[in-house]
Image (cartoon, rainbow, N blue to C red; front, side, top):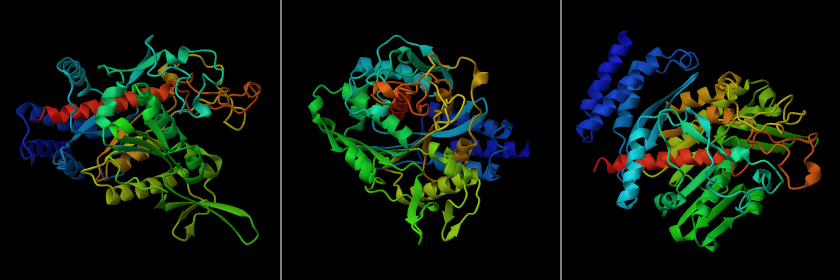
Length: 470
């Protein structure tokens, strides 16, 4: 109990000595949050067994003090870091929400959002379940020309639409429906970049299509860099001219650098440099919002086996466990973020691991999901929370840069019905059960639209947070 008492005392002192003024109600809320944070770290056993010993009372209190004093005096935007404890069955996360300028709205709209914010501010939006919802999707199936064929299940002939009838509902609060016009107002003059693998591209295309739906003159949306640039340089970009904002995607499946070379005999060799961030063709470190992810490529055979593949400096590991390699790579990413990103300008997010649902085999050995038509309804059927995500949480907790963790793992675990399966290509003769199926990515419209609704809710919360302090 001694460490707990020390942390509790430190938390109370922090709430009294903040370097910026808070209204009494705000200070009261902060003190409660710090107390809950204390209780969490000293009562949770499932996660602490996986985390390193750095989570001591003193180091945690230091991190809280940094978070409490985090203010970004740039332009007309002021930000504060608000820490929320997200608790689910077998994992806990420390998430940060960034406060930014609030866009002017009409009084009725503002009042509606205020009501929603009141519930969101004390709610774990990633802990909930899927409920039937007969309202229309954010954008209609087959309506968005920006989708990859691999995600366009409707155009590829998927006959059922029940997978579009579910909406994510957090326990204890309500998330607002995605409002593309409001989102574009908040993104005006900004650059938003998704960096990661094809699951992040899934979310990126979902957001681009959702925003497109709200634009009256769709000819004012320009594809700056297209599919050819994605194949050759790993970059894809759309510009919403009337709002002077761009939504970009940078391909970086590991976040660290993958090398390809040939030896003297002409044999091709591949190495993953765990100590080098992947060098992008286009700089993105100065973007206003960056959403990173990495995960699925770490489960591929060559990565998972880890034989003569991972490299640090001149050392090539004969054998390295993939979780250890993943941790090294994340620390390389974290140090790069802390050294290269201006925390007073750029908001950083990290997308969690998106669940796959291959049955009776892997993607290349007969695994399938084409018969799935409903989400998982029994929590006991969910897979255990991935160790990789616990590693991610431990790395984020030691970073100087505030990072908001989009913990989508559990919510995607339910949705075995939402994958392209045999509808990943437009050709009918390729939609037989014997072909390779896609049970990792998601149909669009579909599950990633809910990820963007959660991102939208976070953005609304951050705007409201600043407004309430003025």
